[in-house]
Length: 267
Length: 303
Image (cartoon, rainbow over all chains, first blue to last red; front, side, top):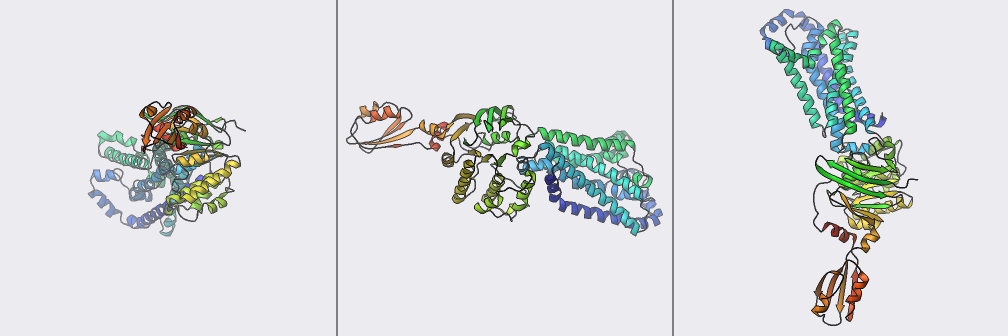
């Protein structure tokens, strides 16, 4: 661990952290403020839902949308899809720039020509990614909980705590994947492109699997299948499968990234 | 005290199938100013990056201060100041931020930082992206020198500097060497190498083709003898001159001869006719270098 590397990483990304936080806060607040209106007009919502085709509903996470609960509404309109892409857009460039991007722009050579080891640099930059991801998730739950108090929406604190933890793990699985690709590449472009491509492909796999029984198996290779914020918020449950998959992904990508970065040429 | 500061033993680096350096063997002793010469693409930067653990050698071994270079040689790098051939910094940050960043990594500010900024006339308050190439080079030099390291690894250190600052850099290097530092200077600006280095290696196509003291290298080099005789020189006399690599006439009575070996014996032959004037020109390091490269190796990417 190098405090200088840690501080510099967060300092270099502070502006993007502020902007993404503002985006998450604004979106979260809007969704919470809107929920009481939805709750009062469930019949209309049901009528709208009936208009949608099964394929359209699948795009938003499958049939059986439930707008009557806060978790169901927030899940469909925010956390299941939009939120994933927002945090991915935040952590993937961070991870891409941390190793491969720094090799490409020469700042890694500047750092590694000083008395600091590769392992130290890779570990510390990952730790900065963990803190960055944690901050995004803290903003996410805070801007659901606080507006809930202001708009008379019953947002459970323990549900938010659980959402924070599992959301952080999901963010680290996404960021960890980008970090691993970054450790193997020169430049941040490949890490960003591959990671966003994989998330996009997972979303398509989930949609396809929800539309057709023939492709049902595809949902199981998609993070969107295991990421169920509606259940976290309404029922305070996270399946063991989800804990295991996001936990193993986050840990495995991190370990491979450190291993790969120690072995690669910094040029 | 270490017996060698740098030692490469058959050091080899391939980038996939393309050659970086091949079977490089040389050593640098404490207090030496060692020149590492070669054109772009010869393998100078690759060698330095292997020594700094940026690159994993394909074969052979590299040692710094008698300790084998590994992936995580952080304590070795504490003793080294490095100026890369292509300097890069955090573009949006200031020179001050960069100096503080390096100070943080080294556990404290460099004792010579203020003095170096003053002598090199470097203003650290400006953002790196606003700096000229010369000012970025000054920042790299301040970073390399401010902690007064035992070994300076300098890859084209005066690139982009004006003559006055080049002079200042060499003055500073001479002071550091007088204080006991070792300098490993990679360059293709040969007059500066000739000025400061006591020993050089010439690298070609990734391999060392000559490695000796500057003095010894120059003594083996071509000398050009210009002779003006007192009377016209017969063709048979010119044809019979021994020990000359080439000879040409100038004017009615003049000869210009290139001599590579046995300068004494060759001069005795030249002086067999009455001479009006004679001068012997020593080859510069540049000419020695070109002897090894045959004037042919220009261009190519940095390796």
